[in-house]
Amino acid sequence: MTAATINLDAVTSEYRPNGATAIENDLILNWYPARIIKRFDHCNSLLELGIGHGYTPSIFNAACDRHVIIEGSQVVIDLFDEKNPDFSGEVVFSYFEDFDTEERFDVIVMGFVLEHVEDPGLVLARFRKFLKPGGRLFAAVPNAKSMNRRLGVELGKIDDIYSLNANDLALGHRRQYCRDTFQQELERHGYSVTYQEGIYLKPLPLGVLKTLPDFQENLEAMLRVGIDFPDLCVALLMEAEAA
Image 1 (spheres, helix red, strand yellow):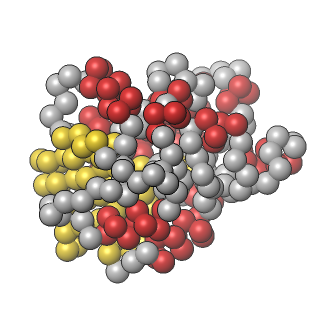
Image 2: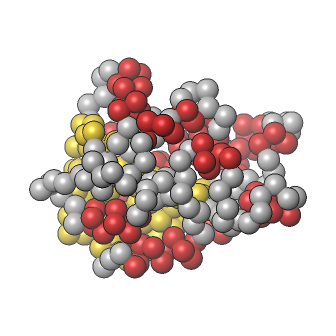
């Protein structure tokens, strides 16, 4: 494993069920996999980078015949195995930068990965060779220009939309993307973006949203509305092919 990569076990507190961001993790991480699957319906082979909070593996597993997950934290793997003893996919303990295989995949998913790694370009370029001809990459990242971050700047909560706040640091984030820089990152490393949408249009802080009637219904509506307004959403989803 590369010495330059951070110790992933040291940033796992927010990946436990009682993490401070649990409500929105549950919301977003159950939403975006279904949006990806809607784009391909079912595939023979799917490679997923990271277990993360553990929401996505079972969703993607049901949409493919072969499911491989690469995870660089043994703590995260152990938590996942404990909660999912019957998981039928293959989990490989490896940093993304070190992973190698002769296998080629129909779909590769980088769900909230690129904001974490030291060199996102290296990861993107490396995994492009693991796509089958005509295969598709799906990547999601937080959005620096989201409405809530813009409000945070106006209210003095953060200095700049691209700065990392306490929650970013707790999650091990290294950078913020906006729609332009995200697409440029993909295109610079050999991909052609074929589709994009927004994930979760959040107009107010979560604490304020909790005070509204029909809290859950409002959250679900913000997911649906956000599809068409990526520039203002909490996160961005892009589909790409090898150029």
